[in-house]
Image 1: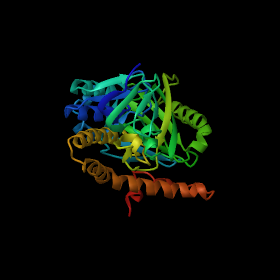
Image 2 (image 1 turned 90 degrees about the horizontal axis):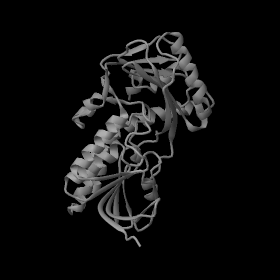
Image 3 (image 1 turned 180 degrees about the vertical axis):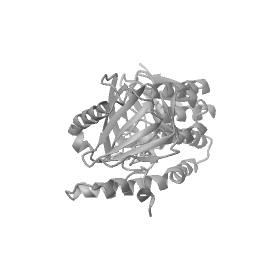
Image 4 (image 1 turned 90 degrees about the vertical axis):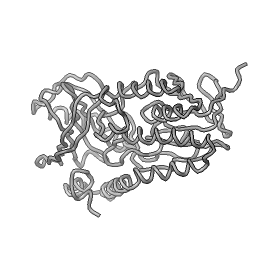
Amino acid sequence: MRGVRQVDILVVGLGPAGAAAACAAAKAGYSVLAIDRKFEAGHPVQCAEFVPAMIGIEVERLNASKLQSITDMVTFVDDAKAHLTPNFSGNMISRSAFDQQLVREAIAAGAECQFGVPLREIHTDSQVVLLDGTEISAKVMIGCDGPHSKVGAAIGQVNHACVESRQITLPLLQPHQATDIFLKPEIVGGYGWLFPKGDKANLGIGVVPSQRKTLKPLLSALHADLMAQGRVGAEISYTTGGAIPVGGMLQAVGLIGNVPVLLAGDAAGLTNPITGAGISAAVISGKRAGEAAAKLLAGQFHAAADYEEELEDIFGPALRRALKRRSELMARYDAGQSPQRTDLKAAWIAYPEYWAA
């Protein structure tokens, strides 16, 4: 009969947040087990694959997964003339290569990373049971298991507001260095995007769950329009989608029994409620969660509170602004009104209305 496996730190989820957490915790010298239900890091890709340039500060070897640079953003509000936002710098990456790179760094630091390992349940005494019946007991647990986090649910922190997305990858017929954003009243609670990556592009739509039936027709219409302009080809090489949390930051610290629990990335609600951007926040929060877990084990009992305060300092103001703008826009729909161009512009980062007090 198998006994309970004991580890210092258990990381659930091996996306960017989990890999960064595992790496940071292992560097501090503690035994770290990181698990993921996926069979391979970064697969399937459920991401538009754009990261802001600033993430290079956190991930030194970003260039290993870089596909192309982004210089600008172009926003289309309904049928109005395109709005150019210059100096909107960032990088399109191969998300699978990016995730694999972070996992390699975690393993090199001493973390044990296991894939194809679904979490079945978390007992009230913090003992974790995997799908195959394996039982694990950890001194600290870090939840990096996405928008529908089981670890988050175990401490009462759930992402109740999400957007559903659908994305296709297709040929890009004209070189492009900008992220294109499409805002329309019929794209309820989200937007459309065309993100170039060399000779291909990611074309996607996000909407609130109640409108998920509109995803396919809206995306097909956008695809047809861009084909008619000669910008993209017809052949679809990859289709993906998933949930994006848009309800703002959750309480990222809790207890299961006597075991401290930290949340990071999507599990902590750190995805921007307007743009849906979350890779940078995942890496940054994951690293700090790993460091905080190590500090807790070293007897620094204030480390959990410090971690939550740090998340507030880094992400709080931007997330609150985004959540306010999203709430204002959704109030139009809730009142049975179709948003006007002014409403759509006020809820997008390219326009000064978004940044107004």
